[in-house]
Image (cartoon, rainbow, N blue to C red; front, side, top):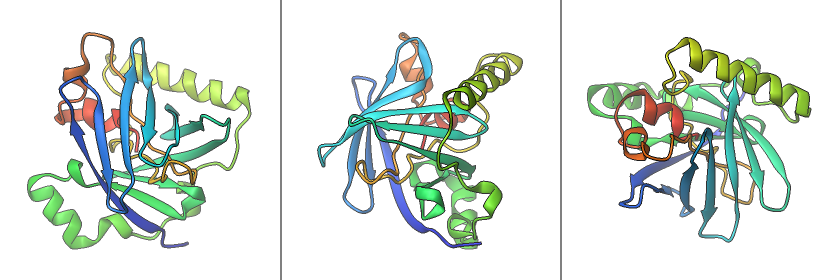
Length: 194
């Protein structure tokens, strides 16, 4: 369908349990999870924007800016998240490790064409959002309570903070932040809402 602009980023876990995300275009975000809400991340960036990213379900990420603006993104796997109706794809460079990263980079997986089925919604009703939250909760319960199985670290939508392509991180419970943000396994991959 179309070939989105690719913006890479890398995450660094800080000593206080927050994440410093650096985008290749110069945008930086500081992200922290919300205790008690495993799918909500608060963030602010170096351009004065702030808000939250929430993993709803069906790999949809809701970005709410402090001014009330809401945009949606979709995690499409391999550390890629589509934002701005498919015009941007954020690529989590820190999630590509070892041979798999070399293979995917060599194949150009990050910039594969995007299909209409992968596009995030333009808008959603509160009822639609709640249905996705319920779906997410049911999927988490049936998988034993770990992170959601959405595939890539929710790479923040490559959102440049104010341009509507946000970023988000999942969250863990209050005392398990290191276990959730250690860069290993599914907890990291599905909780960094990209």
